[in-house]
Amino acid sequence: MISIARLVLADPSEAADLSAFLGRLLRFDRAAAVRLQAVPRSVFREATARRGPAAAAESEATVEEWADGVLAVFGRLPLGSSGVIAIRTARLAGLAEAADATVSAGQLLEGVDERSGALALPAPVTGPAWTGLLPPRTGWQPLGTPDVGLVMPQVFGAVEEFKERTAAVPEHHRTRVVLDGIADEIWSRSLTAAPELPLRAAHAAYRIGFLHPGAPLSAHRAGSWLRLTAPHGSVAVRSAAAPGAGLGLTPLA
Image 1 (cartoon, rainbow, N blue to C red):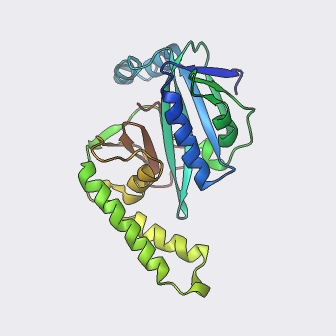
Image 2 (cartoon, rainbow, N blue to C red):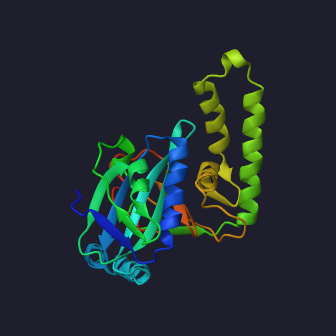
């Protein structure tokens, strides 16, 4: 449900980063939808306090980085036959009530005013199935801090392998199913610097613009969800099917 027509970013410079994120999503799918959720400080504190002292402490550690609230925009990268959820967050100013909607990524991009740091929110759309199953808000357990200097070469090497293997497939056999099969085999491998995560997570982080040389990375798990976080955003994948798990908002810094 959404009744807010406009959101204002606490830091106007974050508007350009949000625009870049949406633009990259649209390169994958010109008709892409995103789910956005805006949560005031007070709502997040109340929700986490009900989960007990540990969640409340996590809330305080996170919420102090906000202004009046946080906006999280979720998009899906269709890499192979599996998808990866990419999350871009931004701090909000003057947010009094929560907002939650699935909207057109293209229309949201058109509504971003980089000069003022404001977002005009488009009308909601009927979203794809993935928008109903998002990573959890809290409960993430650390898995380590992968060295980006090790992660990026593995990603680049896998990209080259994909190109070579697909180029070797005869033209009359080069179907989407065959290409997705090669992609799935490559990107399902473990990330050497963080074996709990699939290489797919790092590939998605690179493709969406989160993975850069020298960027500090962290890996986390919450139930069946795995997350790779960089300074400009996070990507999340499910390690196993677990119907009903992981609903909610994850406000990631």
